[in-house]
View 1 (cartoon, helix red, strand yellow):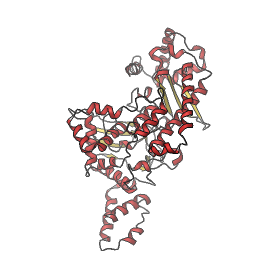
View 2 (cartoon, helix red, strand yellow):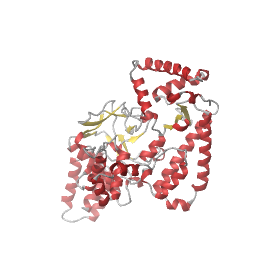
View 3 (cartoon, one colour):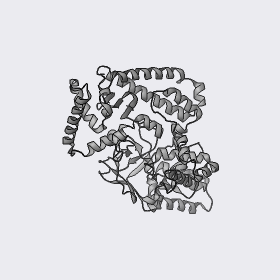
View 4 (tube, one colour):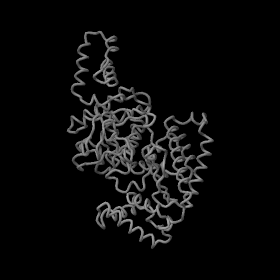
Length: 479
């Protein structure tokens, strides 16, 4: 058994071509050696996914509590992919799972990368519906959590073994009491995300009366909490999909995969453009092809709230209370960051930025180098808190500097339509910035401009009157 594990570990890290068995040879000279070696070689001959890992080095995030080795974390992924393939599903042979080559720039976590180029529309993964963990009759969405709990408790379930290697308590609602207290102080009353500590109690309120929930809370409460968190952070709606949760998120030009599922039959992810070899295959968690108007209410702060990470550029910031909505992204020429407002910036919005930046600066002075406080907070929570702190400070400071010469109160005369569907807002506000005198001061005039912008965008995109614009706006109204 030890021989087998060490051999797999070495092959994964050195790749099959240059697999080094020498340390194992030196330690294993028993008559069973050739038999064990044959078993290892057989494993790699029947599981093509052994080629998937390339240069991956597990970080702290890949082992939940330090009890799992690098080899175990990798092997659970290989096993899951082999299981998908043997169960009527496909995972493309063109992918590899690894760290980015530029860890400092692109993050210290695994991703799915194109080992070979993909054409637009190529299938990345395609799973039969029965491999998904989903809601059930009588228990609703709670059944997905129970299904994940059961999978992780079953040592024969490859998906469950994989999920057991995933980090625990990284979503703020599941943080330690000390981490939550510090985050609460940093956010104050007016900084998003709001109601970020709602999930644990909310799930108890939703599922707590069900007999199965009570049973599992008595049996293994920590594992049930882990299952609950995974469903919040990893599910596609209420569906937990093997392999799918390995797609990282990034918007803009990096978003290169779409959902192409046949609901109830197959769950499929395809490329939405040509993807070159070496590119990471990435989803969008809020601007995907089935995300509807989520992009207009779900920004960087909600990503942090639901998924426990701060997204790379581009970022979107939406604060309803002060009618602030803007994107921040790298300039195309690499000269720094730029802000694009998706709603007219107001004097009230600028005052909000100043107030929150002042608070964040005070918080940083108080805690950034406070070793005593740091020692009370788990390292992952401390890192995530300051990462979010810096993201907010950067975005608000740049928005303040960009908006100070163009502030008005026009956004407060726009009624509920201040938060336009983003695909139209980009076009409309780009035009308005060229001639700011066109901005209206009254609601009636604004409606006329709104209709004109609507007509222009429809003509350019080929949409018909009464189609997606009205549907988007109605859906946005409901949200």
